[in-house]
Length: 212
Image 1 (cartoon, rainbow, N blue to C red):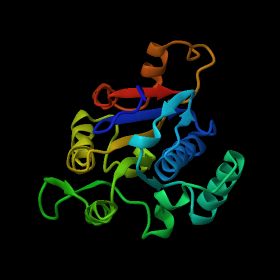
Image 2 (cartoon, one colour; image 1 turned 120 degrees about the vertical axis):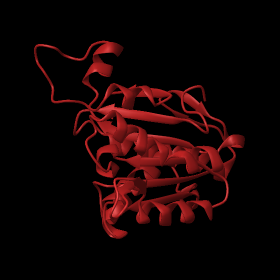
Image 3 (cartoon, rainbow, N blue to C red; image 1 turned 135 degrees about the horizontal axis):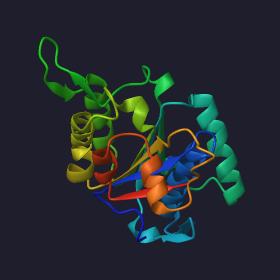
């Protein structure tokens, strides 16, 4: 509440190994629990209203099905119950046809179009009732070309429109910061913004960036 909003894209950035995947899985679990139980949940100290939560879909590019299931089991156990698991849909890309880009070049042209894989998964998401959150872990794994290109960033964001506008769900995307620099550690919001990989337009396109 107040941090992640429906119909808006959000970026979660951190260095490798910090725990982005676990954090997004916990977010998904908390939203799913709120949806199933109707009881408010907490994430980063903020309230997830039970009455306004819904189903969650999480795409993981770096963890396979076994890894995701183990992580989720541990998170549910720590939370005290498995309530909410039926409102949480996980798609480990490695076990679902492989990691895919959201966009791709149309054969024989320079036009960028929605990839066949993303078209398929959009249709699958649309079949799930009351989807309130879609998580993509990670941005770089699903980007079709150079993340430093403003045009590529614009093309990639275009592919979120069916989730944001048609379904009205929130989107959270994980991303990496540049390699740590001991001489210039990240201490402020501007430091985090500068350290986030990709073009400035990429960061600017998100409603909010959560830096860890």
